[in-house]
Length: 230
Figure (tube, rainbow, N blue to C red):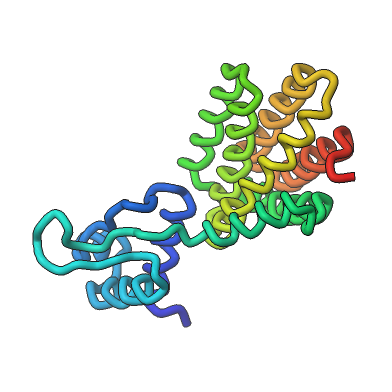
């Protein structure tokens, strides 16, 4: 049976994964967290102690501006740094990252289609609107990677969302490498926009299998079309 403090940890981790809380951000007070999560203040205190022991937050007593719990480390940063190093040094085959993406993102799309986080889906649609407006390749690719992370958040699993957040740098690295090889980026960007729209539409329509198939085809199709990592 999951203890109350573990539920608090999961909710805080979800806020971190969704970037509702970042390094330097301050956690709400015990009373606010207890009311928000429907647990006792003792459970909140236990969760805070665990986070502090993990080196993720720093706590200070009192009532001044430095009081309370402040996030001092990004929990996914070490994973992201390791992935980025492995990709750059070619120790991690791009094909393996693509395979991992298909596994994770097809599950995320399927799950989001059945019980999605409405806020995450709204965020995904906003990202697509921004992608329609930008012209710079770097901006487009950054939004593209964030869109895929956003879909993982929509599935409501904090661990999956954290993994996708850690993968984001690696995704941007190999996609940027692929774009440099393309003879016609404009055509590719148009195709990617259409595929993104279709994926999100299927998720919003609740068509779980079609959404999973669409995101898988989207990821593998780009990899095959560009030949990056081959």
